[in-house]
Length: 509
Ligand code: FAD
Ligand code: DLZ
Ligand code: SF4
Image (tube, rainbow, N blue to C red; front, side, top):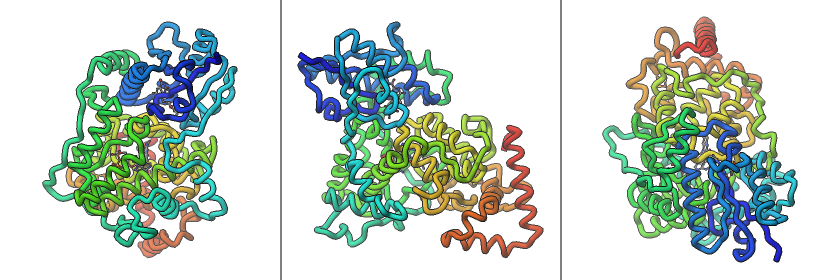
């Protein structure tokens, strides 16, 4: 009988993933491997590595129980070759298998490694997404601009989610304007469901502490779900406790509140522990039961049905060089504050501190604090990309890169974002309580204590005037600048220059 290997990667932990669906339990061998190459292509947060290794070990045990033959390589196995292709070759030689079935990885690097491996590897399309590649490409074909909103509507029609016949539920496709409320003072936020470390996780924690303990990030306390059943519980808990207010305060930021009303499920969906369409249907059911308002439910479903599918389409459509795009020619090195070096900017200190603690920050922190700062300061987008890929437990290149290179850093020239996501300190002051406890003053525009975002904002706009002045959504800002007194404009640019020089000299800013 022909025997094949069935590759299951760390973010493919779904019993119905394409490779498993195409395989034969009676004759094929599942290959799963913890390998140095995957654990170190960036300096992953230790919690991310521990989450993935523990989830992989739990999933391998579930497959064995279901009757699969599983060849599982632990990181500390002395025979471990250190790479996915190396492990496939080793297992092929052990079992006599001469072919591999794989589900196409979510990163060009690994797609290419499998494609050039010295044994035949069939890479099947990953069907765990709502849109097929062909659907996205057909939608994108011939369009001048690939705007999320129109793709999202197609996905609503395709799935019937929040549809009333052929019309959107509630008469509108998008309730975003209801979802931008600033945080309320004294608001209580529900707890995210946490799970104690079982024996498998404890072993993984010891391994990760020994091998990756020096990477940026706290390994413990470790409380992530590591099985699909636990992830499902976390989702159910969030729907019952936080979904109703997810919409209203989606863009708000509060000091020492890492999760607010966010779901903290991206890491589970992306690893394969939760199915995106089932998540959307569970949230839609809460609306049907009258347990959550439409603005919350639509806002949430748009993130998964819209953004998540859209960024995946962009990543695969744009090709392997996407992470190297740098249309703004930004070259500055990523400053130490991203790795926890001291900073006087409370917003950055909060976002990075929470990232260190939880391998998590919510969307607006990623976009309007760390992302905004990196873009204003002209940091090399590839360095920014590597940072985001490393520090978040939900980060894989297919989803991280379009968010960072495209949405956040505008390095793709506007494929994802119609204008750069930049703001002065005003936006952060409006949407958070950070500024009250900051060593800088958000109301101060120049001089002693001026908020760095205020200075860098103008510096960015002026540096890139030729590119952005013609953008109708930015014209107003250029008019404001042009109306400023000449000496004031000069002061702003001089102080911004001095700030950037301090950054380059690794001074604390
Ligand atoms: P919630 O706020 O509860 O949102 C619900 C779900 O919607 C998420 O779980 C996620 O599956 C999906 N979602 C929301 N926004 C996006 C988006 N822009 N793209 C794709 N899916 C989205 N998301 C990742 O999954 N991995 C990443 O590596 C990643 N990097 C990002 C980098 C930057 C600079 C920015 C601005 C965003 C990034 N995002 C990334 C998107 C988003 O910030 C995270 O999905 C979200 O913060 C995860 O937390 P949550 O599960 O609590 O999400
Ligand atoms: C992120 C990650 C890590 C840290 N370690 C492994 C691993 O040891 N073995 C594995 O199969 N996958 C791992 N992954 C996930 C892969 O990097 C991921 O499959 C690719 O980046 C494609 O998305
Ligand atoms: Fe951030 Fe400026 Fe507010 Fe300080 S004053 S928290 S640097 S926006």
